[in-house]
Length: 161
Image 1 (cartoon, helix red, strand yellow):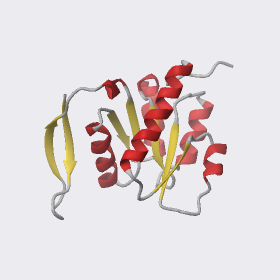
Image 2: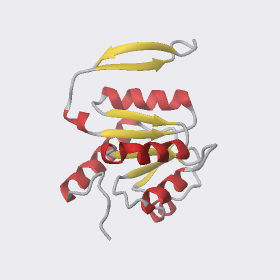
Image 3: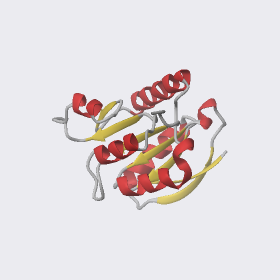
Image 4: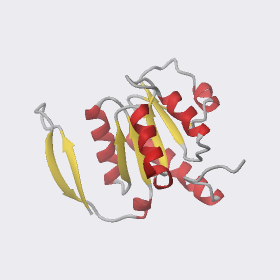
């Protein structure tokens, strides 16, 4: 699989590079990464892609919701969203996904150590990843959440009333 990414090299501006990645079982799993920091989003996307996931990115909760409403709902296996963004927030997105009756696992990312993970769960998220976080740990948590949803037969599907 050929993936087009942007990477920073030695403090230089972002450069485009193509990388060949081996196919993996995770390729059926697409992660929607939502953050208004383009460089951080690119780094996360690259990290997930290197571990065999597909990624889609959005710069705001509004853009992410438009992607989901525009046909990506059944294709997204998990959402990793920043807590605070310019256009909408992670909780706004999680609430909207709940209204859509989405069963896709959502994780919030934040640099705010005071944000309570219990609040995230009450908003419909699986949990919180506190920046800076270990990407390996993030991948494991998200992969486990996807696997749990697959086992229950509800990943990416809407809840029934």
